[in-house]
Length: 106
Image (tube, rainbow, N blue to C red; front, side, top):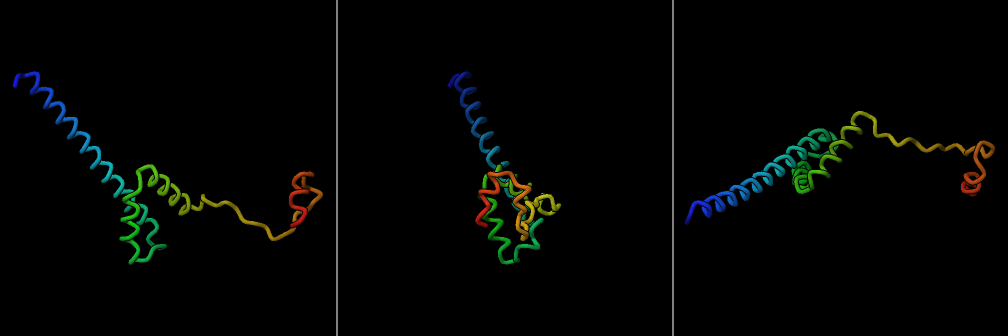
């Protein structure tokens, strides 16, 4: 084997090792995010379900876990409020004609 072939083989092996390292780093990051999410919601999850949820979250993609983590943070801060429905009937004089027509039956 000459030097060029040796260098090509070494480069290919290094690329394979780098790819494998990146996979393990992503897996570790997913596990950390899953644990962080469950730690923040531990009051809402029973002890029996904790390991089951940890396993489920660890299988999710990194992007999904980031979204879930952000949703948990917003919920804990009280910033994730979509509002409340009113039980009072809407005043039809303050509504535009289209909206009044749409909710006329209700």
